[in-house]
Image (cartoon, rainbow, N blue to C red; front, side, top):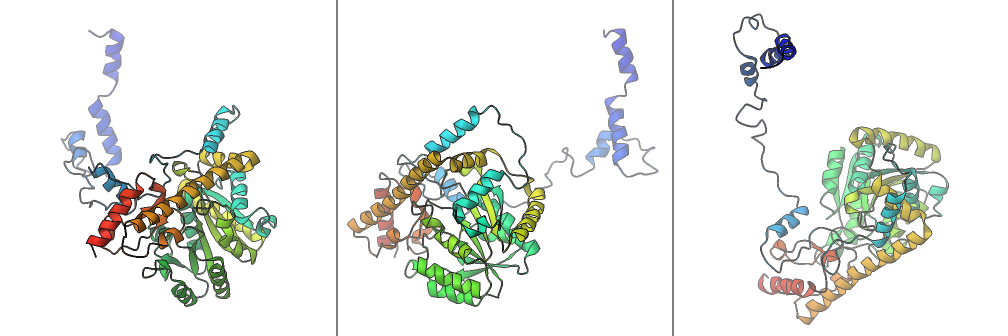
Length: 448
């Protein structure tokens, strides 16, 4: 039997049913019949379709969404029982053994951060880590950039390249007089979704010529030449995704002159600086040409590929403005875009990047590791080209070694690409090149 004091407390406390009934009385609409209704609180609650007691979900009518066309390749790979399968879908660098790579300099920087007892986990400002922003702008625009020296650049830390594009897109939808953005055809599959959800109208311009497996330069100039004045144009800074086809420096200059003559606003996406050619400066040439003329532009940066920080989601959005006072106002408006979107960015990945970029010895180590990754991908291209030539595979495969960066367009037709649509050269190794060459050879000779 419970002690007397416990029994007294139980007698004074309202029953669970009574408490629930009181709660229902506060939540349900008033009714003159409710007080006289002889129903329990539980049965009253059960009449609402959102309650857990109902048999079916309020989301029961939802259709199963399709797999992401890029990430879905990995899903299919994981389901495939073949013992000789090769995953060449997702754009992430792999070692010769097919394993993810964490750069040595990244491990060093991370250990330094861990060993620093003064580090705390406070929120970053809305714009992110100030040192990271400053060093990111310097990396892409150059240390001697007039735009940086004149304080004409507004930079905010974002959630990798995707987040940078989304913040930039929403900023333009709110504050730029043109709401149409032209993107290359083809382009990264997420670009049209990101910009559409940002509130922009998405159009395309010709970029890749399947007949020659190269840049459709005449079509590009024609389409941008007919775009309305002031339109936004998305440009891949280097290592175009997914074709691996880039304009030459001479072609970039023609593109720049055309865009400036029509007041088209450049929006650069730089996901592979240093990862394409092995040179940070060479891979930033196209961007710096546009900055040098004094015009305005947007720049989305990502450190996923060139520092291997895929899961840290580290990126930056920079907007080059005409003057320093405009840059200050632009930053103030970017804050208003970011605050309700994700409030502020994460600390850890940006701290890794800042640690490496600020230290000359660590920066040099990073450039060596970066060049080693780029050189290995270039070598894989050469190995695949050689393997196809040695097999006598019909066709001219020189585009494989002319293209640059992580991805390549093979030139296979629609039936042949059903199992080989998008090849990430970063996923190839000396061990898997022969298997891939055999697969391409079979596709070309058997599925004409």
